[in-house]
Length: 263
Image (cartoon, rainbow, N blue to C red; front, side, top):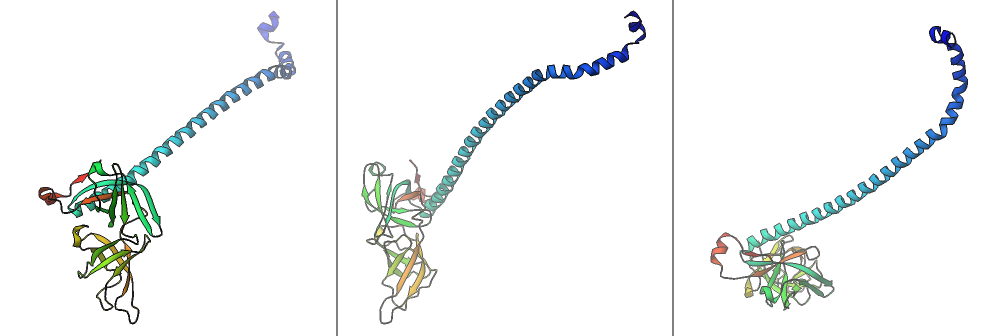
């Protein structure tokens, strides 16, 4: 052993023995290494599953927030359009939300979340950002019923914006059609003409859009033309409307803009 320690004569013998013994060492250590690797793999898989679950929850939360943001963004756009509409009206107005819609044949009504406590009254005009929608026919303490201009029982005085020719717009029981009455066969009216409220009767604000002429037909021998109008108001899309107090004596406010009350 002394000679081998000093001169290394048995180094080759140890190399041979090490080569022979290595497979035995590998086989002995294999279960332990395999167990450690399996344990590490299970821990890693568990961590990945937990992280994956956390990321899924975060994604759902972010998607929910994004959807809410989109809803708020669209609501903000609609309210901005309503405010711009109120400025054009130069009247006192109140923003109301729709709580129920009845767009059935020959029954065109909506219910809004404003009533007596806000000063709503029977016959009050209701508009959206695009045109006249209708008028209040029933007022409760907290809500009101609005008869739309498309209802078959509703009529309102209008005029052609291009030349001031007056007529009566009558509902046809559908949310996409109005009929113009008492226009002679030779009346100066064209497809695409804008129909606005005339202000007669002091019920609706004067000069506010009602619709555009979509079709004109003449029946031989008949005195009057058959004129159909596409309403300007978005009856099947609007979620907020404006209650209007026409002809209110708000001289100072009217010089700048409409008074908007939002509750």
